[in-house]
Image (tube, rainbow, N blue to C red; front, top):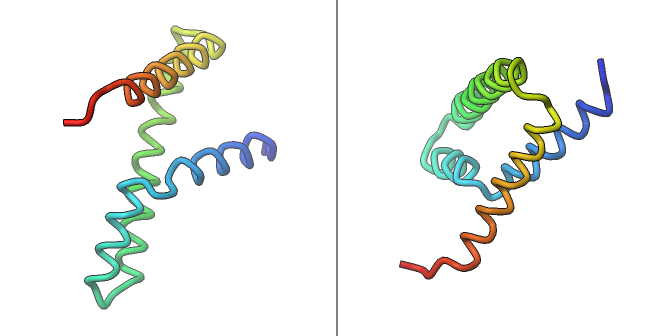
Length: 91
C-alpha cells in the first residue's frame, strides 16, 4: 500500500468534508434520531459509494487524459470556482 498517497487522500477528503452540507445533513439526522449508529452507517456508506464512483470515474478518464492534465484541469476549475464565488453578487 502506498501510505503517502493514503494519508494525503485521507487528509484532503477529511478537510474538504468538514462543515460540508453532507456533514451538516448527518448532524441533522443524528440530532433527530434515537439510532445514532444507523445514521453513522448510512452516512458512511453514502460517502463510500460516492467515493467509489469518483475513483471509477477517475480510472476511466485517466485512460484518455494524462494524470498531469487532470490535475491541471482540476486546479483551473477550482481556481475558477473560487474567483466566481468571490466576485459573484449574492442573490
